[in-house]
Amino acid sequence: MTWEDLLLAFTILLLAVEILKSTRMGTRSIVDHVLAMALFIAMLVEFLLVKQAGTSTFFLLTMIGLVDALVGFIVSIRSSQRQVEIEPAA
Image 1 (spheres, rainbow, N blue to C red):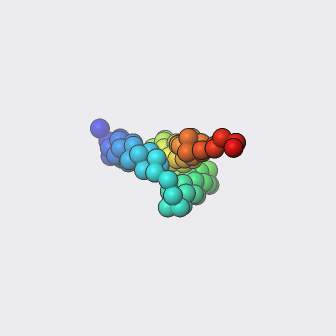
Image 2 (cartoon, one colour):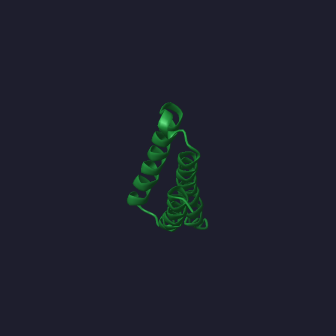
Image 3 (cartoon, rainbow, N blue to C red):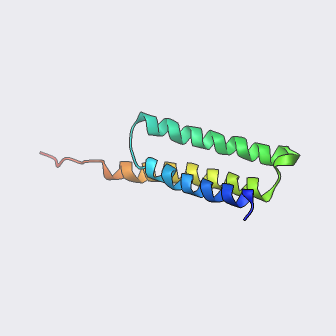
């Protein structure tokens, strides 16, 4: 195993923690999702523009960032739909 493999394995474990964190609701979680999206955009720009960042390891880290951002938004949207209560007409 190389250092890159260990880094990817550790990142996947952190992704699991982030997915669990995305299930909570509140202003703090919204900021967390926005920051995750900003990090993904920064990583994508760096991957495309910086020659030294154009490695397969950095690409996989960028994809993990994308999954983190998307899953955070999706889980928040899905859980907020379940919290909507409609009262019957009187």
